[in-house]
Amino acid sequence: MIVIGSDHGGLSLKSALISYLTRRGLQVLDAGTSGDASVDYPDYGQKVSETVIAGQADLGILICGTGIGMSIAANKVPGIRAALVTDVFMARMAKEHNNANVLVLGGRVLDEQKACDLVGAWLDAAFEGGRHQNRLDKITELEHKYNK
Image (cartoon, rainbow, N blue to C red; front, side, top):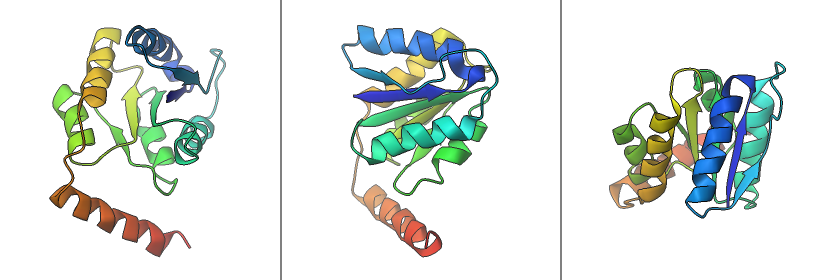
């Protein structure tokens, strides 16, 4: 299960990605927004992140105008490793090296095909573990240290 959410700036791209994910045979949970009225991206970053942390979805995708705000918001949730990506290499590395459990995209900076390519690269990649796990463990230690 993949949970996907956006603000108004990512609504159009979110719809395209839901179709893409469904064509790939994946179950998708749409966490909103559902209209083009201006909304606050932190609300959707939190909703998607909490859905992933609760185990109600395996992975999450977030979209706002640039992806920057969603990335900042999602990464405030302990256990979330949200990666804002703009090319296929970054999307692959987000999973292979960082085991990103949330992918973040910019709805106003990516066209639909490019976004689908990025999501596909991320989904098809696998975490390599090893030295990368040691680094993730250090990130978890930082979360514990600063989230008291």
